[in-house]
Length: 206
Length: 81
Image 1 (cartoon, rainbow over the protein chains, first blue to last red):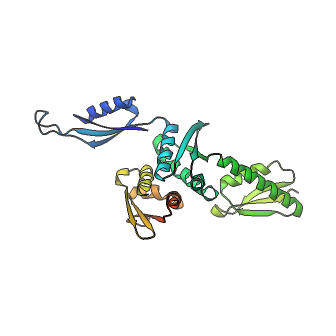
Image 2: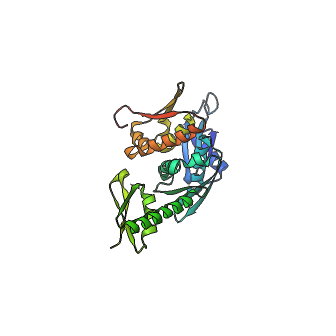
Image 3: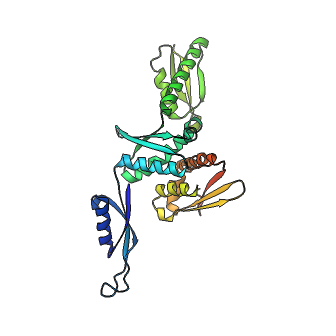
């Protein structure tokens, strides 16, 4: 998002000048009038200049990168945000210091950042936006850890021959476990419970 | 910390001009209060408090780095919050 404040004799003049500075099309610009301005006597004396703030989107991915960067800066963390648009998903990656704090316990802070970014970007683009937030390879590491957990639980279930209920987990985590177990010939998996209490159950195949 | 909350709350609101954030620092704790246009309360609080809880988690992470304790509250005239 490029943004500029501009004064002019009238609102129209100010907007035109601002769009020129930003180098875009007026149709795509978001205009906020800061001061309507007043034409003075004979257009000269006692008048007040109009002032506008014009912002221009640089594409959803770049806007997303800038917003996340701004939030991390204001959090006081020294970071660099990269962005890529993959199959309609805005894929953001954070690198830098304080990664532990940015990720949070079991990824909770990362998840919170993702939660607030979705509606913010949705407003800018005017449609539902899917955002994926990654902290320097954190998600891949976590997925691997969940896959290992799936295998350990599967082994245990086969050994004791009884189903095992896991602690409540978010949908994204359960999905990784389901996928990891779907082709296992010895166990199957399903979920039970509602909302925050929804848990994954691993059962021996009969 | 005030700027952080202000930035996020304004970005979530339909009427960013009417978002007001106040920071009160007591000895061991900082209290941040968010006020907004009534129709924006739902946007900032979110379904089952998802948005405001996410804002709290983000603020908590930032505050922890400075060894601070910060609470974030939404102030509404009616009982939405």
